[in-house]
Amino acid sequence: MLRICLAALLISAAAHAGERTIEAVRSAPDASLADASPPATAMPAATPAGASRGAMPYDGRKDDSSRLFHVGAMVGLVSLPRPLDAELYLRAGNYFFVGFSYSDFPAFVADPLLSAAGAKSGSTTARLDQFNAFDADVRVFPFAGAFFLGSSFGRQSFKAAVTESTVLGPQTGTIDLTTIYATPRLGYLWTLGPGIVLGLDVGVQLKLSKDQHVTMPAGSSQSMQDNAQSLVDFAGSIPLPSFHFRLGWQY
Image (cartoon, rainbow, N blue to C red):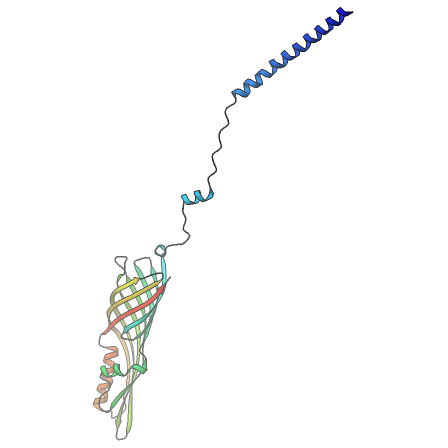
């Protein structure tokens, strides 16, 4: 009986040993495969968001010099032949400029002008009723800078009255004159800061055509007729100096 029990124990131990050997053999390929697997690749460190943006800076503001068209307005600080002056313009790139302007000579400051024109002498006085003009202005900037050459083409309206004192009372003659003219000019248009412009130009106003209506009273003296003719010559015949010193703003 004892022998049978010992034999059973030996057989059981041998069976357990065989099972362990089989399990070791089965697990060996898995281990070799695990050892043969490639090493894990290290993940690159995340780049901070601020660093990537710093490498490619971006400025959302557009430089004014890169704009193809600029629009602006200027007013005259000193202007001839009409002291009140304003202009709207469009500038294309760095080379071309077109503008439209209005100028006026107020009647309440016309006495020096009428005296200079020779319309007031002796018993004859003169009154300015209208002296204004509309212009279309063209300029070329040959060096893409501040210097320009150009010309304006305009229509000028001039109305005045000449009155002479006589023994029968005052008698008045009227002048109504419309002139089409060209004003070749040269000058500078500087950009001083964000949107600020300063312009300076000189030229001469030349008559191209005129339409005049002069009405004189019957029996008017030669002096009165001469004074009226002086106004006609001044406004529509002789060249007039052109000068503009302007301050403005453009976008």
